[in-house]
Image (cartoon, rainbow, N blue to C red; front, top):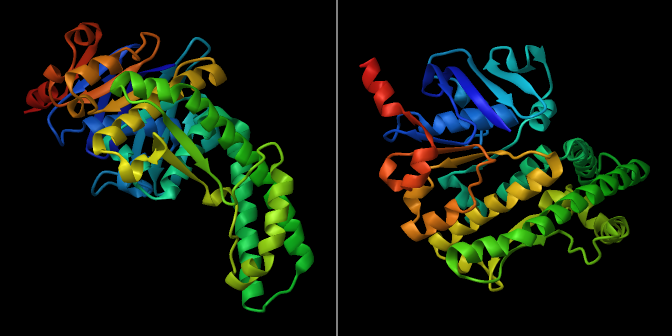
Length: 366
């Protein structure tokens, strides 16, 4: 899969611009603040109908404008479609070939893996960031996951509202609580299975990638569930037992205390959590290994490669690590790299790349 072109209208600092990409390696060069990252954000936005940088979609609209539009032409061996997304006074609108669609159809149609400096928060940040990461990846891969996760969130909201009524002595509807708990367990078990399998698949590749780049062994991800699940083939029974144990505590607190909405992932090296014991360099390579490990999973499930977006990745790596990373850049994958300086990038890569020089574009406008 690749993107042929992207058009902007009032998106961030892209007032009215169009950019064309080659099917393999593309390098966007320009000084800081000129709009390199906003181009990658636009591509990510087209694939997920949300930004990877902010949860406030209104922030994507340029200052003093009332709407923004981003459109892109995506292609693989099976399709060639124009995707258009708009944010404005009418809310968010998504279209494929000028036909309105829902967000899940956009997500399933495309596929993007992005690495950017803020991804270090996946290691160092709060658990909700890692849960969001899992959801974003699984939503791209499986339409069923998107549906089940949405249903889980809906049931969870209803159950929490009912538990709040128990807490305030406004309701004692035990029958409804049992119905909602059973529904929650059913959806939770499926989410656990998806997440557990995905992390297992990542671990099949991630240790060897990390070792190849750093010469450090035994890097892996640990899936932390709440409650702790011992038997991943028998989610429902384990969850039912756990909810039975804590139901009175949940009524007292007015909230659902266990379930996949409290999951976490640990990045571990030699059984030590990277968050607490790893250097920033080791953490950064951990994220790079994670992103590279996603690629074969995406191909196996979807039958094509995702678009790989690398935001200023080479400036953070020494020459040896850059060269080791380049081994994983396959000609079958469209890659879009941002950089402030071309001398950060291997000459062999430059010769094969389409260069988009934003500094030259700016000079022409001046």
